[in-house]
Image 1: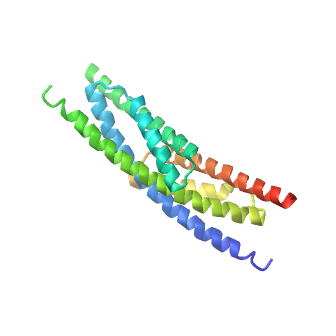
Image 2: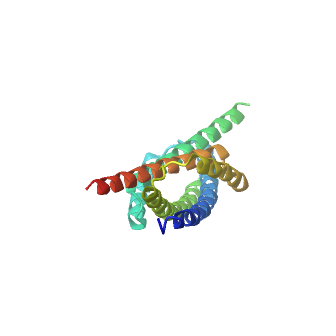
Image 3: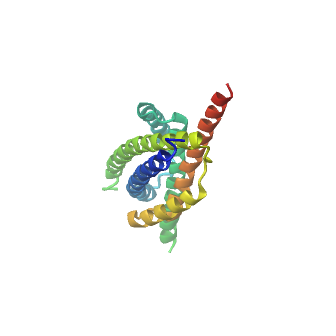
Length: 105
Length: 105
């Protein structure tokens, strides 16, 4: 019972760290999507497909390696990258559709 | 045709940026899961439930605000947080099950 009141304080401090990390993640993701948006425009302009399975395979194996070094679950790291790539492909397809629509006008 | 050869170079450069950002994301996520793992242990020790809907609601509204500032799609930011929280709850439940198993020994 004596050390019970410390739990909320420790929780608050850990939650503050999580909030800081989440802010960093949001800004990192925004920067990542800036890059992929530019890639989408390049791909649409060159008529390249939105998805690129060979690039994805390289990314996944690299990320699994990095996850090992960071002590992050490799299965989760792969799931995370696929989650992001799904969103990227959605953007790419939007860009391609826009550019197709503009070409048709 | 004259500016076609520039596309691969621009692509390579953008992909390098993405690889750098992904490494940062992996290390950030590893740090985030370190925090949530500690929270999971605190929660299990205090018999608190793994999920905390009121905390999640605050996190989601904060993240949507941050996403706006970062020019990141707010719907995606929310989806992203839910994706991470799902994994966190999976960890918390594992920790709770472990501590329950130890208590039963």
